[in-house]
Amino acid sequence: MKDLRHSSASQLLDLTRFLAAQAVVIGHAISFFGVAPWLQPPHAPYMQNVAVQVFFVLSGFLIAYTLNRTASFTEYAVDRFARIYSAYLPCLFVVSALLLIAGEDVSLRTFVGNLFMFQNWTFPLRGALKVPSLDGPLWTIAIEWHIYFFVGAVFFARKSTKLWGAAAVFAFVPIAFLFSDGRLGVGRGIFSLWLMGFAAFYLPHWRGSFVAAAAVFAVYLYLLTPGHEYQRSLYVLLAIAFYAFVARAMSIDSTNTAWGAAIRFAAAYSFTLYLVHYPLLRVWREVSWGWWGTLSGIAAANVLAIAIAWFTEMRHRELARSIKRRLAVATDGRASRSSR
Image 1 (cartoon, rainbow, N blue to C red):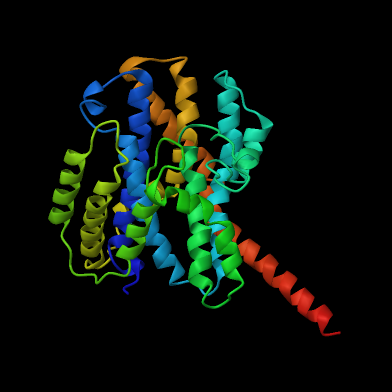
Image 2 (cartoon, rainbow, N blue to C red):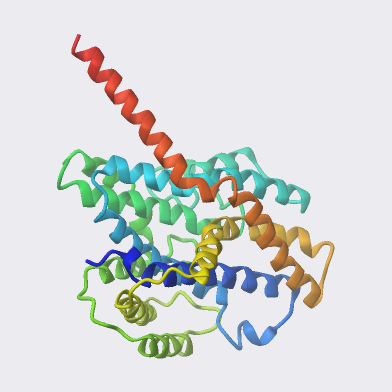
């Protein structure tokens, strides 16, 4: 398959990630500040919920691409850990601080449970291990985390059967969200949508069509019931729209432009923005209101996310390389001692 970096797909998928993150922020902001009712149920679907679905189908495709370019499960696991926790760990502290400023309680059990991705945990030991999400959209992070390691372990189990044990440990959450919502109330069948994105990587990549992608996506939005966006029967339309979009993007040769650099930068802090915007808007609502509060809150969330991501998320590759070097040194050290 053509390398994403050699086509416009990399740039356009980065743009999609950035726009989806902004849609989540805007959707939450207009809800917090009570503006633009025509962009919310019953007039229109919650854009933040639609954006989450876009994230999942995009994630499935990118993980398939990543797995096929990765030599081992260890390398894959290190890359996933660095990608997620480079932003997630510092943002948990920022989120907690913002919640405390907003007058919310933050229990140690909830913090630690979210740190180890036990929000949305299902059987076994559900009563002992499951904790609520620390705030806002963090419920999706644990689902993605368990999907990453479940699918990654299954993918590499053909090389090492020991990985079936890891797959079993991480299977509970993905299976819970394959057809249901894991008793969460949102995200029904979201893993099935992720798998459609994953499958899109392996389908024949015809030239595709941006027009067809936009048309199918418009039909998908039209058929959504506002306030009930997680409709499994419509996921296939979103997946088809994504497939047509990415297939067309991959047929266009990459061009290095100033816009490309700007898009890469915008996408590089999108995960941090997703993590911190919700509690920031809680605080912002206490000091501002109306359209001014909405627009200034969106701007403040972006500024805060950039400030955090500059030292964290944007350096996730450096973190991954550092961990791999340490693992290589540790492995070499054990091999040296065993040969004595």
